[in-house]
Length: 192
Image 1 (cartoon, rainbow, N blue to C red):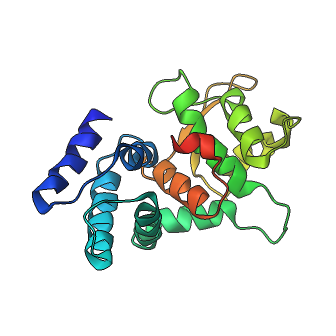
Image 2 (spheres, rainbow, N blue to C red; image 1 turned 120 degrees about the horizontal axis):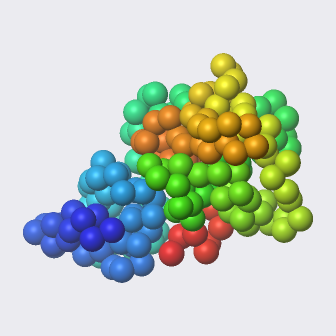
Image 3 (cartoon, one colour; image 1 turned 90 degrees about the vertical axis):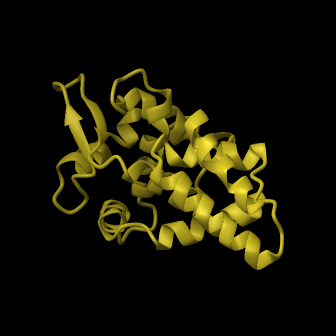
């Protein structure tokens, strides 16, 4: 987080200010990867210039996220689209993938790994249903790791009944977080 804050503090050279709440959100979305704070910072600076202000607001950040999503690498956007597309209105692929991206932070696994149990709390928050169980999304995790249609966006590690997962591409979780925010799926408590 300090390095990301350092990246954003360099914008003071062009008289652009990032308040603490905006910095916290950018830190959250970037998941430690420098590409995203650079991209979001640049988009925020452009938006500030266009708005005639030098302070990045949450609203300006939201607009910058829209542009950052549009400028994401084709492989990332395709992986997300393939993983979450469904003809069924009540499909939960986007919600499960978002819960996986949020699970990384609550996990004690190394290298961005997580277990299905780590996905449960964010999934319940996203679906606003505290009665949901792992069995609701376990098949989704398998599809994300094995299915030629949906994945592999996740890599499955370990043995049955003790599986761990991690994203196949480290650039995907930040994109998933931004898409979740853009679509209104991201619970507010995960933005700070």
